[in-house]
Image 1 (spheres, rainbow, N blue to C red):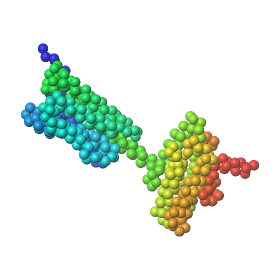
Image 2 (image 1 turned 90 degrees about the vertical axis):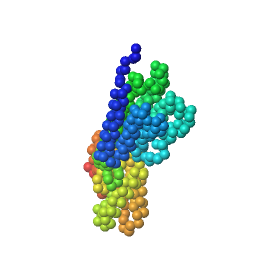
Image 3 (image 1 turned 120 degrees about the vertical axis):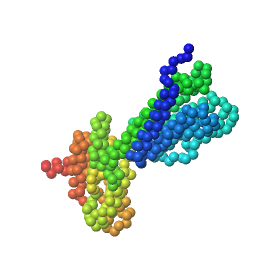
Image 4 (image 1 turned 45 degrees about the vertical axis):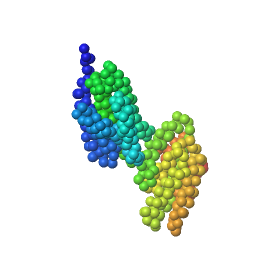
Amino acid sequence: MPATLILDPRTMFIALVVSAAAAVLLLLWCYVVNPRQSSLLWLSGGFLLASVSSIFLAIRGAIPDWVLVGVGVTALLLGTSLFWCAARAFNGRRIIPWVPLVLPGIWLAAMAFPAVNSNIDGRVVLLTVLSAAGYLLAAYEFYQRDGLFNRIALSAVLAVHALLVLARIPFMLLDDGQGLVAFTTTEWFGIATLEATMAIQVITFLMVSLIKERVEQQLRTVALTDSLTGLGNRRAFFDWSEAAIARSERTGSPLSVILFDLDRFKEINDRFGHPVGDTVIRAFAETARARLRAGDFVARLGGEEFGIALPDSSGPEASLIAVQINQAFEQRVAAMNLDGLIGSACAGVAEYPARACTVQDLLTGADRSLYAAKALGRGQVRLADEVARSYSDRAA
C-alpha cells in the first residue's frame, strides 16, 4: 500500500512559484521606493530566475532535456549567484562581472562530458552542491559586524538554507529505492519545497528589514554628525561623554574634557570671508582628529567651539594634548599662505572625577577654564584645578 503523502508535491510546487513571484514584486516595489538600494534589484532578479527555472522543472517532460539542462538549470544557478551580487551591492562593493557566471559555467562545462550528462543522479548532486555553494557565498558576503542585526540574521538564514539544500541529496538518491525520477512525487519533495517557500519569504522579509535598519542607522548618524567637519555634533558629544563617565565610574579611571574656542574667528570671517572661515574650521577638525587616539572623541559643539573627551587621561595630560593640537593647528593655518591669517585657539580642561559628576558639570568646569585661558590672550590653555586655585588665592 503506497505511503500517504503529508504534503502534496504539486500543491507545494505551485506555492513555491507563487511565493517567489510575490517576493519579486515586493522587492521591485521596495526598489522603486528606494532606488539607491540596488541590492533589492539584484535579489529580485535572483528570485525571478528561480521562478523561471521552477517552471522549466515543472514541464520537464514536455521539453527537450537539453533545454532543461542548458536553460532551466543555468537560470537557477545564475539566480543563486545573484544573491551574492545583492550582498555585494548592499555592502557597497564592486560586483565583479564574471563571478556570477562561475556556477552556471561549472554546470555547463560538466554537462559537456557525456559521462556526467547521462548520469541523472550525478547531475542532481552537482546541481545541489552548486546551489548550496551560491547560498553560502551570499551568506559569507552578507556577514559583517557593523551593528546591523538583520544582516547577521539574513546571513544565518542563507547558511541554514544551504545546509538544508545539501541535506536533500540522500533523499533524492535513496528515497524508497526509486532514485531521482520519483523524488518529485514523494513527500520529501513536498517538505523540501515547503522549506524553500519559507526561505524565500524569510529572506525577503530580512532583506527589506535590513534596508530599513540601515536607513535608520544612517539617519541617526546624520543627526549626530556636523555637516561641515564630519565630526560628531553637540548631541553626539553629550551621548558619548555620558557613556565615558559611566565607564570611568566602574573602572575608577580618569576622564578629561577639553573645550577649544578658535581665537578671533569673527575677524577671520569678516576679513577673509566665510569660505576661508569654513576652511579654518575644517583645518582644526582635521588637526584634532589626527592627534587623538582611537578611543578619544572630538566633536564640533557649535560655531568655532570644539569639545574633546579623553578617557584614561588626567588633567595635566589633557593640557599637554591641547597644547600640541594648538601648535599643529597654527602650523596648518600658516601653511595656507594667506597674509594676516593666524590660526590659534584657547582651551579649557577639566578632569573627572576631580571637578565633576555629570557631563554638564564637566563641561562647566572646562568652560570656566576656557574663559580664564581667553583672558590671557591667544593660544592659551588652562586646567580647571589651576583656575580654582587662582580663585582661592584671590579670595584669601
